[in-house]
Image 1 (cartoon, rainbow, N blue to C red):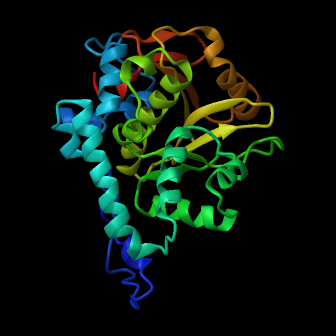
Image 2 (image 1 turned 90 degrees about the vertical axis):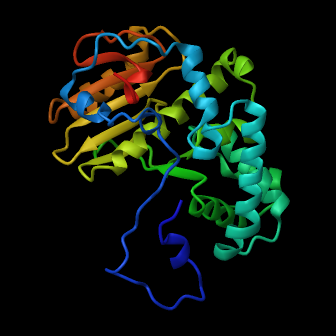
Length: 309
């Protein structure tokens, strides 16, 4: 993974290479890339047209993909233990070789624990003071460590959507692990146990969707990725805005069924924030096979639509 952002952060480098180097983000492989399928989710979403059924990806199959992740070397490995060992070696290499080039990390044990903590908070709004206390680090130091991990592309923030005069809109970013395989290895998760744990399952599926969505947004400057939360605890996991200001909202559920209640935040958002001023489609991604309409531009869509059709 390389762009020139690490190079720019090296204090020994005097030239900026402005207008001479293009910044290219190389992410872990998406499932579409692994399957050699051209990404079409965003196009389908903004057209409001999805396949009626996507077979072959039940809940367990989706979790298999999430535990595998997208690092090419890890994708080729056959067992979770092999992937866990590879991820450990990968992190050791990053910390020993690459990290010293971009930050002065004096407490590597705290940094490793921070990686585990951030992985456990993936898809959540972080409460930084308890994290600082757990690590025994000051807030400025913790912030600098988090910035270093973002520079290594292990974690990434999604900005809030704030294009409204509603005064209770949240303005905090949300942090995600950039690879679900690495995330599950760092946390020592077991697939069968995670599938039975609603909190962990939801967190993993949301991070999996983020990994797929953000790669597709990268491909086309017409799209921007956000999330929404307000002080009334209404949340929309992801909002994708097209350059013409059309919006799609996306909620991610690990379960195999969807109810009208899963659209509550999106219905409120559409009626009270959008107010018909711009096109809005609400989507709930779930681990079922069928695309289902809940009326008024609200669709339940198989999570496999992110990469298959």
